[in-house]
Amino acid sequence: DQQVKQNSPSLSVQEGRISILNCDYTNSMFDYFLWYKKYPAEGPTFLISISSIKDKNEDGRFTVFLNKSAKHLSLHIVPSQPGDSAVYFCAAGGQTSYDKVIFGPGTSLSVIP
Amino acid sequence: DTGVSQNPRHKITKRGQNVTFRCDPISEHNRLYWYRQTLGQGPEFLTYFQNEAQLEKSRLLSDRFSAERPKGSFSTLEIQRTEQGDSAMYLCASSRTEPGETQYFGPGTRLLVL
Image (cartoon, rainbow over the protein chains, first blue to last red):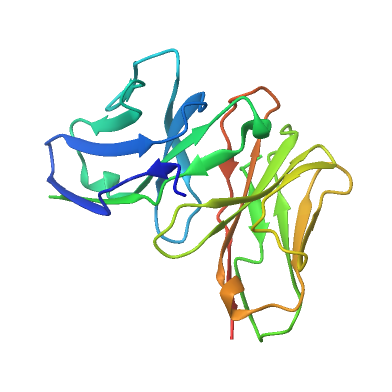
């Protein structure tokens, strides 16, 4: 049973345009959500997070939106740059289970120059 | 401190052999996590330590797997009698104690069981 879903395995975007990566979750007990970026041969790198009490968090070119009623979150990257090409993982965690984090399967983003 | 480190970065072994991986977390982090990642999937939680105490283990962690963090600093993950299905990237992460604190990942150890 996949609790965190990323239904788009891959996404291609032109440099300078907006990249929108989507994530859906099934467990309403999740308390916070994170996005990680992963380059080949490296571990995931933390990008941005959002608490369940917020609906938006912004950090530079990256904005995460949370829609709790729909159990949906999205990551917006504006403007997209070639260096953003990587696999992006959506992850969710809660105050229980010692903050074990559940990851989605990832979306591979390609930003085309 | 430059972050979470893992050794070795790559390991090739024959089925039935034992392997051990090491993780050195960020020095001030009390929490240490092990994850496993297979191709096309996100990292899957294996186990978690708060200081030296192992507080949770996933059902993915069969009795062939054992993890230790004897002094609350570095951790080891041992796989006994390896199987081809154990081939994966093994990731370690660490974080501070506060709930929701971000986990920082190491580069991983890629295991190939022949």
